[in-house]
Amino acid sequence: MWRRFSRLRNLARERWDAVLAAPGGGEQVARGAAAGAFAAMIPAFGLHLALALGAALLARGSLAAAAAACLLIGNPLVHAVELPLAYELGRWLIPVGYSGPVWLPAWTRALLPVAEEAL
Image 1 (cartoon, rainbow, N blue to C red):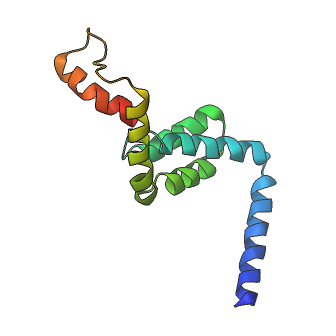
Image 2 (tube, helix red, strand yellow):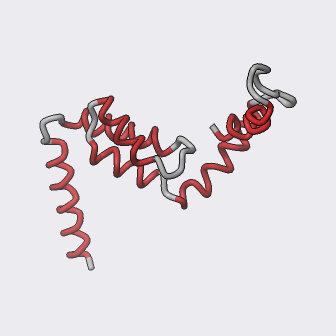
């Protein structure tokens, strides 16, 4: 058991060193991971991966790190905990009775509070 764990730890360390030795280095990996985390927190279900890769391209980050961070943070198990907490935080921050801008159509103003609280 310990031998397998040791091999797995050594393999993870070798892979991590290979990532950091890449031409972009740790900064590129960090930008990619940040882009993936950013995209995972946006409530645009189904578009997370595309948003993560687009943000990583704009930030000149690692596409692999962006995809990995997006998939780790944006999975349904994390969202089952994160979305209700974010919704309650939004309800706490937005004043009661806020109806949004008056220039929007009525159907948009009806959906706006839910979208704002989720964001």
